[in-house]
Length: 189
Length: 189
DNA sequence: CCGGCATGTTAATAAAAATTGACAGCAAGG
DNA sequence: CCTTGCTGTCAATTTTTATTAACATGCCGG
Image (cartoon, rainbow over all chains, first blue to last red):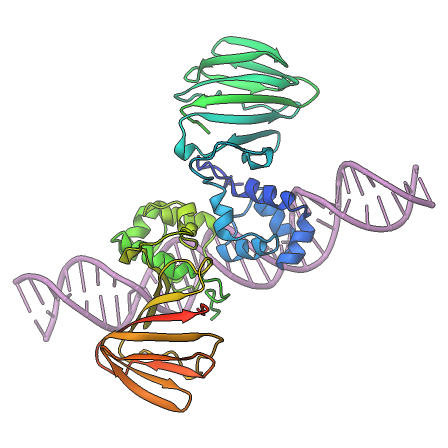
């Protein structure tokens, strides 16, 4: 029942593994076979329902193949990087809401995210609140944004900007995915 | 009874953890307290008698503190590094015989090691053999070196050079630690 | 429509790691 | 000498992870 991914670590092991596995074009079962583990183990890891031992993780990565160094280095892309291909964005979360980050917040004070909300996706009943300033532009779909006591439905081309200390919440009330490009400073997630 | 450190990975998680812990000036118990784990767990990990889950390892490193990225990045020092401080040498083994390597063999064909043999330490009854050429100079203490059917006791200032395909063995028959600076090409350990 | 075959997920069990609570070694100070 | 406090290690138990063997879903061809 525990959520092993919590910890504000900016590093979600499950999401990261799923990302590199899919990037390698492998199914859970196929990777499992190559790695010498079971598909169930990979499923549990990717959903953060278990935290693999380092030796297990090494076996799994050998099946991709990828080194432990490279796997954990994804947490910290190069310091002075300027250009990022789409596949270089760092996944911070996936599922109903997915966040993919540009660059490494260790070396920057501005966080740019590619966000995708599935229909019905919601940042949650408990409103978000953090000491930053954030804004963004809706690219596809629609999103219902609540900030303090104000609420609005934004469509493609609409934008927002507010002080993140105000309680806020994103909810996709539409029928298709909603894509947003957002920025936050200082970085939050 | 399994030796989790095997795997020719050039990366001994237990040795590495012990190294960074001692570098931080912490005892197993003190680190355990800061990390919120038990000293026994740290002992087992450092001796490669258990392979920590990633979440456990993260907790331990938080107590140092050190990030997972940095911990695993030690496996891969910078590619074009020229100068190394003593504390930058990469520990490959510790205990009765300790090996500390200069730089990263991923990018070099010459392996330089700082070796230390405790009194009685021995590379083992089964002779070493590998496809390299190796040599070294004794800095402190004495070492009994057997190569093929020849055997000699080398003292500080003495040196050796031979083809590693010949079976060989190092044994400290003295009463104090023996320190050797060695080189091997292509890299072996 | 169905059957076949792929996907990812999940409950029960086996295996492995973490904790608890010891133990032995060592150095400093009575 | 003994005590005190530190170090690291280890066996037995608890807790967590990995495997086994299901199950549900989705897609494609008949």
